[in-house]
Image (cartoon, rainbow, N blue to C red; front, top):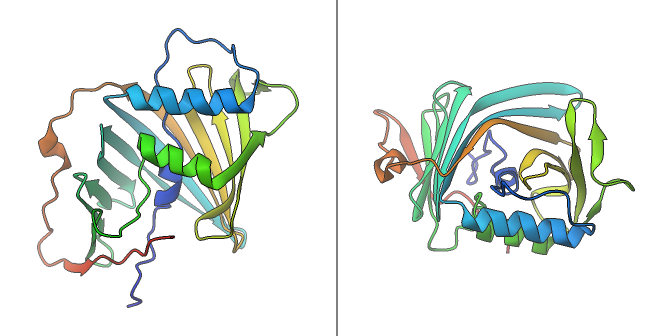
Length: 229
């Protein structure tokens, strides 16, 4: 096996997609910088959230779909459970992240305190994202009308420097400054789109939810992920 696991879920994009409670806000800001600041500010106020997700990946014209739920508790606890592929999950208690791939009977165990720059949907993750990308509105008129409902801000992002991850991204942001949809493209031409539904904020999660138990018979690989720096 290669010394770096090929993760089935594009973890990087999870660091961009949740935002963020602001019940009283309207579309008052006119600059892309103001929108970005509001996304970050709102995310920083969250105690927790949960959502359903749908991921569509396309490479060489061949699509694949993944579904599941994500749960987050501030400042850094994370649980991603897949219904497709069934049984796959990602768990983080803030110090360690575990990625279980049942089809391979493998657990990737990443120490987040010693060189493991693993992006996660946190306030610091969003700051890191927007510091590494140039961003602008994707269209002239903002927010843009959508065929599926209310208008959304649309942001176009492009990497400042060539690195791993997504060279370009597009974000769809609602009037509450929640990123409800995200699309990314890698340097190899793979595109990944994530949409979210049934988003709930400030849910009362117990810390025990974010504990990981090693599945029987699974093989562990320590620190497979390499920092981008």
